[in-house]
Length: 195
Image (tube, rainbow, N blue to C red; front, side, top):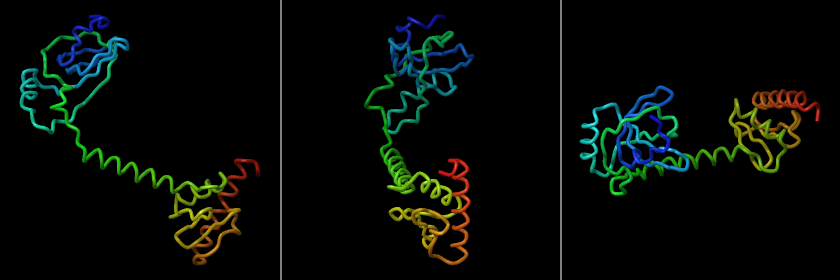
């Protein structure tokens, strides 16, 4: 069945059995249909009988509804579909549930991650200095102290970020950092041709 121009069959809330041109078969409830883009927004239903699906909709009157599997599908990819029934309005604001605690924890986690990533970027340093910082951070705990790289909270690497610029820390820690700086300097010289 040609799906294009079949907007009436894609009314909000209707439950359809859909076969796509890619061979997929599933049941879904129409959340929305955008005619200009020919795009369907579908709530994919679990593979259970339609009578049970309608019954579950009736029983889910509580505030915390189940998680939804949402899919966007161009109607031209529908090979055939069958109307199975009319469900409740999937966009009824009285039944929509947003878990604010989960959203807030995701936001806080994203902010913490962004702050941690921002701390790893040196301010006012050369790309070579940032590259050295990144190389050191792969194996050692590092942080920036203005334009100085602090390794293991004891060894400091100052501008111009050469092996001779490594100071502080135990002799073993100092030597380890010095070797990484020397190796990274050689790697950068081979990459940029001694610039």
